[in-house]
Image (cartoon, rainbow, N blue to C red):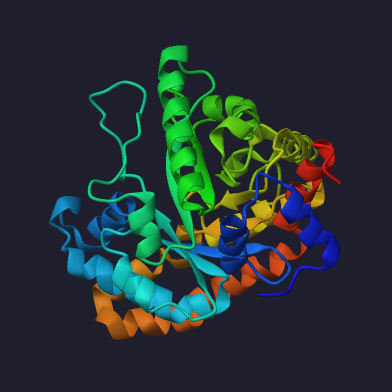
Length: 354
């Protein structure tokens, strides 16, 4: 990692929001330019569903060993091309040990999914883990996922906000960066449908604004983009089927970007690599202030059928060709990304500390 210049060191020393440990953690997971070019494979239930589709077996019958082998191969072959990798501590720690020496490590702290019998998609933490234990397991940064809708009942959102506050305090006490992944939704709408696409810009923008507040002690926000790319006018979406023109989509990107006073990165939301590339191109056109990506399924999901049909050798061959090509394409689009350092410097200026 590069050494900070005198001006940046001054910002960090005088900015109470970024301690020595948090600075060290952010450096570990980013490029020398301060861009987070990370690979996400902390999926558990989502990965089981991909295996279930490829094998015809029930998701709950997919053996852990298959998930472990898959994650190990992804980590070993793709992390030389990433600044870091996001894994889960349940079946992902063997993969963490196989990552490139140059790649940092983020570990997930939340349980996968949510209890569908309880309203509100309430989150919960993994049993048997704490921020301190995750750091001891090698984590440079801690990540939690939160389903959040500004349109939900105040009672539900109050529970979620307090939950994030507690985790923020725990990360601050251990002096490790806190990444909050926000997944937008609406209780009564399908996230893939046009009705949700109409409110997604507002949902993403208001969520970014809410969790930028200092009370949460979040360091980096991980979010989906503020539009559904399936409804953005373009070569694959005729004007009559589009909800947003490209100009309107760019405006949504800018508005969401302006709502965040913290560094934020984009997740791929399970779309294809081609769609995610178009997403990042649109973000760049819009002048979004994003600081990188945590790209998951868009990079490696098509390797699951290869693994199921041909075993580990077939997966390794697919990753060495298609997987590396996918991650390089995403990396090539990060020239427009902004260093996370810019936001912390801006915070220092606003606080009157420089």
